Length: 364
Figure 1 (tube, helix red, strand yellow):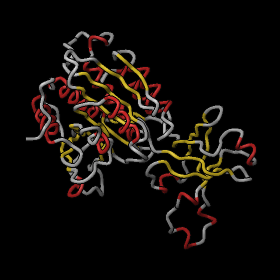
Figure 2: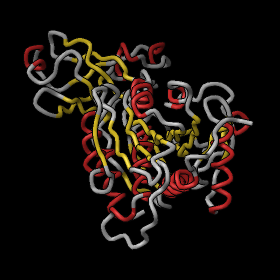
Figure 3: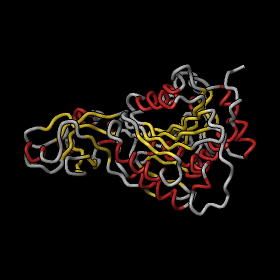
Figure 4: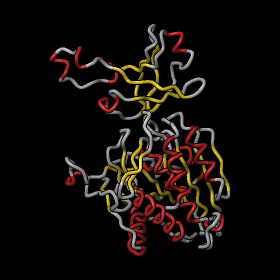
């Protein structure tokens, strides 16, 4: 992965964008897309589209990665200026204890800290109890309610204030990897498919037959709203959804239940549930043909991804699900291997190049 792509990824990860408030990272994503896509636009729901027109124009292929992240929302400001909040998405309350948060305030970002009673002040029976979100508050240093309300309001959203770190062995650590890495991956796949538009690239190939849209969808963590609306408006015949999945190469992981998923082991291809068996077979065959390492994940029920909405759009969409192995999901320290992202983008690009107007997606 080149330096430009890595710099773009770090800007994307660093820009706060909890579900329902994704405008910041969406702008960053569209600015990068404009450097090589044929068309870049946003819709009323907040989805961002980067479209590459195919030689044949058909089929239409949607590449979806959601750009939102888990966060929090202010529900009450008390007389002393403390902020009370509710979760946006699935939080382990223990992760929030003692964290700094970045709130999307009225005049710009506001830094706060998550407070709770100190252990010195707890009774013995309190020390063994897990923290609950309703017992935590945010302190922004305000003296009273009026001072706090000059910076935030009920409904203000925020995220954990955690930077991006480079780790050994080509790994990075950050909040928001779930799933800004999916939005990044689908745009990188589009970049591969349009090399004649990318400055400095000399490996230009013919455009694919299919018209393809990379979409940074919104609100996956809470409603699948972006998946529903983008799939309906673009009306694809096939789709690839990119999300993260739990890596099982760490202590206390249950490989018998969750499979053998390793950082650096390649993208994970989902089998079952919302996934098309035709697309699954194509992805596995392409990975083996192209020498791309991969793993398979069993999803006998719902996937918990945008695929659950996209495959049901209109008369149905032949959908594949590709996931990036991720450690410590829904925390400030999610960890991935960049090689898995690069290989996922290559696999998606190979899939798009493989499909033609006559490609059949009906299982036989």
